Length: 272
Image 1 (cartoon, rainbow, N blue to C red):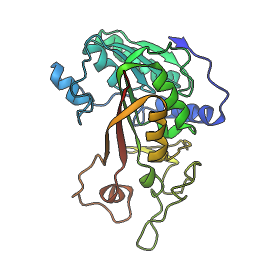
Image 2: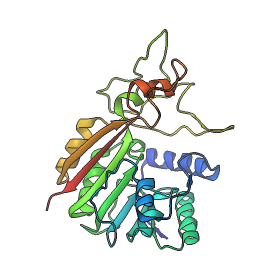
Image 3: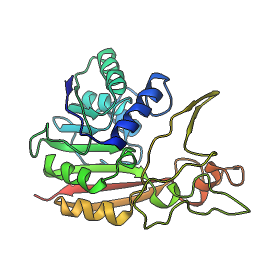
């Protein structure tokens, strides 16, 4: 495993410590859940259930799993024939991928570092960049997107998923029959915690205090950042993972997710 010098970045260092704490405890998003089907089509559905990579050839593709430690995705890309590199700031999550890849008898390349600095990679090194649910943990989204645009090959595909900037500002803010944003939509600063949301992570009966620093990057920041990096957006989606018709407790985070989307996904192509 290569180790890239991590930028002197207090936010990154704090979040690295929190993810190490979460990963060592085996909390959500730090280890593989479920088991993918054995067929190629089944593996693709398992990894990409909303088909954001539909039509993209993965066999032989150079794939960067950006901040993708801990889960199945890099291993599935390798099983589908990709030449896979995993980049993550957490040594424990990288080890989790390494061990899973060994059990599944595939090879992945592991690099540790801060996603704001991908200088370890040459220009146009990857055909696919797969970036799930981690942009929220950096303060400078435009810098990350600029780096993605640099390492993405001409004609390559970038898929980003992250927290919805509006909904992130509302979690844990239910009072007197309604939600009130904790910061305005126009503020580019960390979303503050409340006692009800953000500091305590839960998995079944297990709870762990790990107050990560999170930013709700606005749509204009993300889309304009992609454009400035030489990418053209060809898809944008807003969704919540649960059932919008489900019976949820009034004022809970799950209830909020039935009213507002929890996540956004953006797909972009590098200009050829």
